[in-house]
Amino acid sequence: MTRLGSWNPSSLDDKIDRLDSLAEIRQLPPRYALAVDSRDLDTLVSLFIADVRVGRDRYGRDALKEWFISSLTRMKTTIHFVGNHVVDFDDPDHAHGIVYCRDELERPEQHEWQIGVIQYWDTYRRMDGEWFFERRKLHRWYVVDALTRPAHGLGVGGEGLKTPQLPEAFQTWAAFWAARAG
Image (cartoon, rainbow, N blue to C red; front, side, top):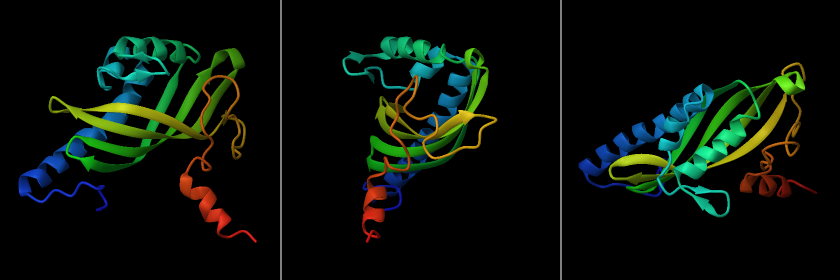
């Protein structure tokens, strides 16, 4: 395993392909953020595989678009600032990664402008020579009114989107602290 995942290409052509793939994959999160913030839903859903799973029993970009419409009408303005992005390749056409993001959400009905920090745990798939999101799973550290000092878990698990709490969502988190208990 290398720092780019378990797929370790041996030929020069495969190494160049992995570099090109890395560049393409790294474009997905900022394009997602821009599409969300500009409410460009056609571009947004085009970043996902055509048969994307939406919820437990729906599939496809049309279902995803409906989901985004429902989600994005709960707030007025959003700002997503994409930060660290780690990508690991599983094979030439599959990869996974973690993307850090700071988000801001205007919630006029609550008279709040919220700030938060999230991670997306992504899986990527190349289809017909192009990379897409296969899945994005959101995890949140916190979301609070901009006038509130952030605290662990503040705003998580309440109204709206339910997300796993960070940093506890990391499998390694509990093991780290369990090894130091006692």
